[in-house]
Image (cartoon, rainbow, N blue to C red; front, side, top):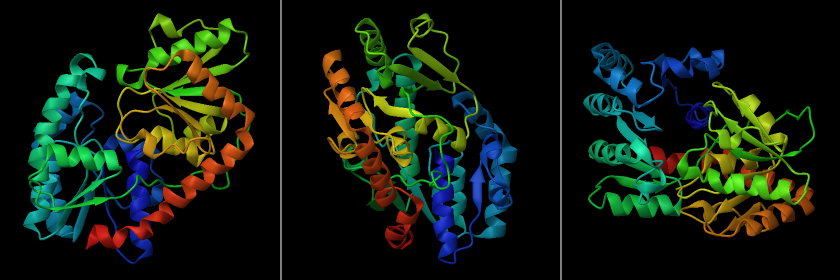
Length: 351
């Protein structure tokens, strides 16, 4: 989704007369249209923590960043996700007189145990390094009231300017239509602990044991090997390492509802991109999620520790009122999160 955020921002800047260049990993090249590739500087091949470390230790990447900044001398730099090379970008930005804008998607994770394994320990290091980056940041962007609260808690010393701007996307729904009817209740993976996959599986099993006839789908860019997800007659798995915006949109338009039984979340691209394609959501009530689910209009909120029956009841309500809710979801997205909404926020961001 970072690609979508970047390109939505870039398009609106260009409409207002700003020349735009993009900075992407080579691993994003496959998803970019030629018009964007021609304006892009590709640095490194990061796809994971290990490849990010490798890219950061490669002096060629830092030299390339410095070369680009010495040539372009940008007035503003807007970075969307944390990367160790961001520190080199921030340093070069300041050296050449630019304003450094950093979008803090996850300012602080309070419930680190929800992630399990190595990931929770990485979060401590990530927050430490992000704090160092914010000391070089002129404008910090957060995308929910919960994100703003966490930012203030984690970085009370921040002396730049903080602005709250919703996550904004390229609108890939236009002129598109699903080739198949909606039939799935969908969980977007991978099924890592923080996403609450065990709740999803309880719903799948409950529906099967009660003869509901519901079809479920798990979408993942990581291969599913856990036997708990395999060989269930009412659960299809859509696995592909590279899922384009168009393919993902098609999956959403084949979905009756999307489930987000998360244990923690500041805001959610899964929820908002579901709305883009007119798909209602049933979400847990953790973190910033309640800010984005309008009860009975775009979906339903369920207590994180609710019984499986409560999740099933919420899904049933969506199925009974699906046409109206699909219209509500699409309208809510267009009015608040589509690329045209950048016009409301550009002045505050670039000032």
